[in-house]
Length: 110
Image 1 (tube, helix red, strand yellow):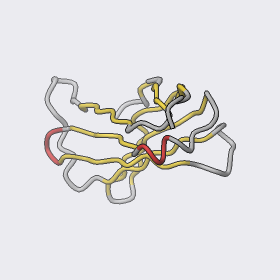
Image 2 (image 1 turned 30 degrees about the vertical axis):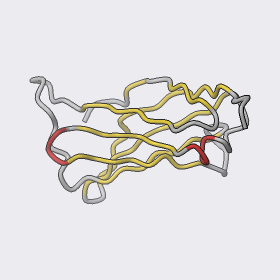
Image 3 (image 1 turned 90 degrees about the vertical axis):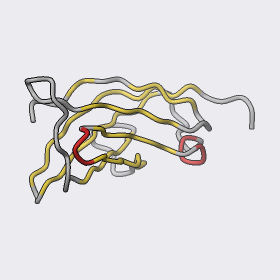
């Protein structure tokens, strides 16, 4: 895999968050991600000890990676700016595929 893609995300506080990315090889074909696992975390800064996890779902040979956070989790995001990254792991080899800034739009309805 190549260097991590820089992708900024927008999350509505208190709402379900869903983002999907299709990973392709240089020929435009879906990457086979069978056997991969994923991790993603949101933090207030790169050096922060506290984090909030995103759920990473990988669909085998389709190259599809989905990031989700339920409404209860996004409700805990109280600042308007965070950083995040997404890493895939295959047999101990870890690759960061995405990173960027998370902007949180506060909710009014409670």
